[in-house]
Length: 285
Image 1 (cartoon, rainbow, N blue to C red):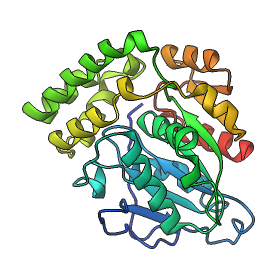
Image 2: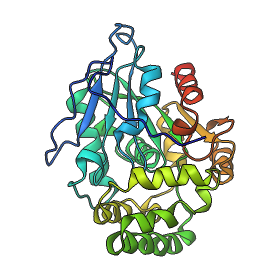
Image 3: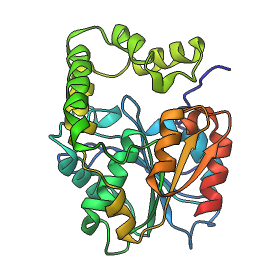
Image 4: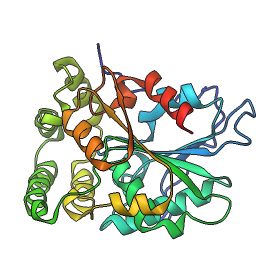
């Protein structure tokens, strides 16, 4: 099975306002409104991609959900059409996400985040809830895909060194060479050779220096443990993990959140099993 990363087409059946021009305070985003009117009384869905990705990664999921929900995809700093936006850490990254959501939406919404996007969604919900907790566009819940809730303090120094080494490589070496090694990491072990090579080709459009900057800014070493704050928030939160992603399946069980294991999927469920992923989103929201 090849790993196909979908793209947005100009003649999509879902109306779009297009990618919003990047400014200092708003990230590039694409709002796709339901053409059927079924989304009127439902929350919008806001999608946050992972490191090296962009908002277009969610197209297969949006194809499945777009008749029932208004969908907003956001290009994170250093990625996609937000490639030239730099951030220093979680706080300013999440402030940009919150401002972008408030700019586009006028209804309650759920955050759906993958990997890095999942960690940012959890941080925004746990630490900066006030920025998305009031008004028409207020946070109603989260779906977390393969997201880490935070490392114990004693493990953070090693993780900081780990991420710093990868950041230095992204800055200094041809990105194709770095990506070849990146996808050899254990978290991607469920992918076959063809799938990994497909990702290398797709992700080579990234600028290495921007990936490095975002990796440093949002390193797992800088993230607090978020699980208790999320439980205290009172927001519904559902965790999705792939059955072939042993590390994150264990984290999901340990987290104490309601979690669902997706068969025949690894770390990136929404790409490997978009139909099953979308079915869970529909059922949970």
